[in-house]
Image 1 (tube, one colour):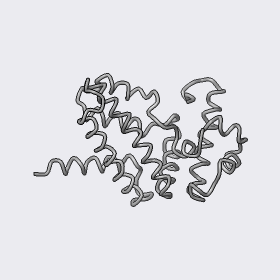
Image 2 (cartoon, helix red, strand yellow):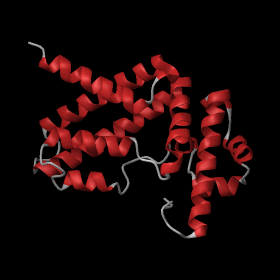
Image 3 (tube, helix red, strand yellow):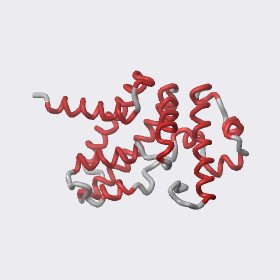
Length: 203
């Protein structure tokens, strides 16, 4: 993906175009629903040709939700290597925060994230696709945890941690849909984490 921090005008233009495509995709979801538009409609809304559109995004889900996977996130690499604190669960939450809130252009955090979150909240299919992304992420996390802790692949502890993470994400998506525009997703995610911690501390 293009690095918005570069001084290369070509890379900056490419990044700006990608953000315009993603914004158009989210707006179409909000206005028509996920199944209410085609990639041709998206190309027209973004002001690009169909060929150009597919140079930037492979499919509708990627246009709305962004790229799948953790990519080259440095916080993930730090987690895999045992950082930043050396304590598994706090480090995992910090890595998850970095992955889930990652954007390529800090100046567009508010607007782009707000559009993505509105798209998720407004369409059940988009919420389901987002959950599928988190399921894929949980598989990746299980592998990372095993590598970090020197556990065998598929270790029960790693699978338990990632299953818990998926449950928390599912509740977070449901709660976010209920709150609508009253909160952002990361705030809801941390509210659910706090609720989970409170339940675990009950005697």
